[in-house]
Image (cartoon, rainbow, N blue to C red):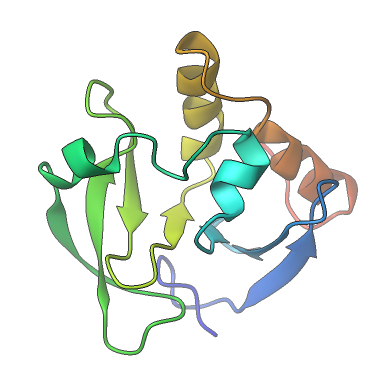
Length: 134
């Protein structure tokens, strides 16, 4: 499957230390989380703890969902009171995150007391030589 962000690289599967399989793009650093994976990773009750409110700020994108044929992702705020925006599929509830969004989401969750560590994924990808964190 092709990366919706850069269209030039294939997604590769990666198993995190939490035994969660996520897909990532080695070219642009995008990470795809299927429904339930992000919440498991960051230890929150839901992938998007404020989804209903965030959807009221949805903007259409040209990005295709990784798993749903012909479905476009929408750009929504991860938290309605924060600037960080993520790409979300209304059909399968998957999330596409940029490499820069990962630490920002972790910071939001930490500050708002919502989670543990999402940057663990990036560190594991780095250790195994899949990506370079700048």
